[in-house]
Image 1: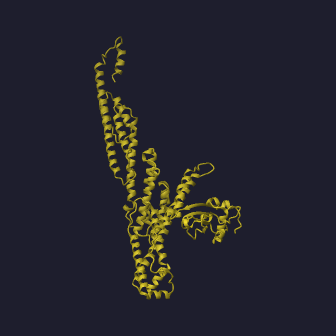
Image 2 (image 1 turned 120 degrees about the vertical axis):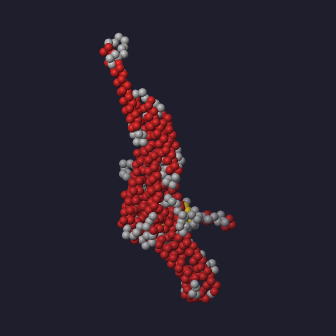
Image 3 (image 1 turned 90 degrees about the horizontal axis):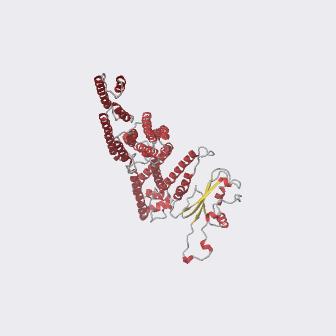
Length: 590
């Protein structure tokens, strides 16, 4: 009807059907006009064609003819209006622009594809599987580093973030569908939905059995809603590492649950039941009104909180996809957004809500720091050069400083009093930073003591071997050093420190032994100079230099006495004049 005679994107091979059958299905569908509007300018941008799976006929109904294997007719639906149900193939046809689709631009304007949905399976699950099994792995293999594609990798990274966000949205939508609560229908009165007139209500109110059935149904609804409200108010046990996005998802689940209940409360069945009980002056109706108001309030609260958390999510995205360096400039804007929420929100400005939010933000910052330091868990701290891991640790510590400064600044600007527990809010980050400082101390010690491997001194090898054992023992620990909850590291760090202290004492003892055993001051100075070049502050050589000075004085005194005793008659070498013999003798006194 649109006048387009080009090959339609719904090609026969896509569904295994011949062209004539497809044309017959489209011409016979009652939504042909809706499909025709897809080609017009500023009209629908997406349509869905659904081919239900063929249900085999029982053997006694099979005729053996071709008609028995003919698929069911197409069901043409628009994605904004209907939801495809059942098992079968879905073909989606979309376009990006508002321009009319013609023969000349069809190839550029239309995008289409197909998915197969199994029985009792959501289309959301199928789309997620397609993204995870095909598009995401394919995207990872694309290399955009070329002269023809400037900023290619940056664009790829941004698109990957968009894909992840879309995947999150699909996951959330699927999980929200599981949060629906169904209020039981009155089996004894299946026609209750149709009693919309006042006369019908009056007649039902006069019937004892009908009134009892309606009253029982409403009482069961009150009990079900009461249970839902109690479950909602219970403190849910959450993982201690979830981020702020989980707070948004939690409130989306609440909104879905209460909105679905509101739809049922506003249904004709509920309206008719309330009308009947009002005429009968039932006490159950008063209880019902209380729960009706509670559900309405809970739905409004969830809706408002979802709205403000969606606005905050834009500022929290860097926490999920950035590193401490890129997150740091965004903290100020995030804190300003939180301050606005705290001062203007109708529901989300309570101490509990804000505390939960800050705890989740702290969790995600710590997770971002861990991913940054370990390359998303692919490497350990030992796999990086000292300069690299040190820089990353320092960036993580600077992020905490910026985060704390932003919080303190927000407290100063706020007109409302901040009665949050800072230890509860930031305690995890504080513990993580303390762990980083210990790790940095350990790495600093190892970096300094690595210079011992270059010392070539007689008797020093056992000290080098001991040092290597200390370092190797720490490197072979199987747990995650960055997990501040693992107190095993604290014990191992103390042991490492004590071992290094003992090693330092051995170096000092080696230096002392060297000073005592070496026959000359020159040899002693050579040994101490090599040890001093380690630049290890823990090794104090000043006492040993004092001993060398004393030894040098003793040596000078010995030489002086020997010279004074023999200067007049130095030992003569064979066939040497006295003067010529005295010169080399005096030189060899040292």
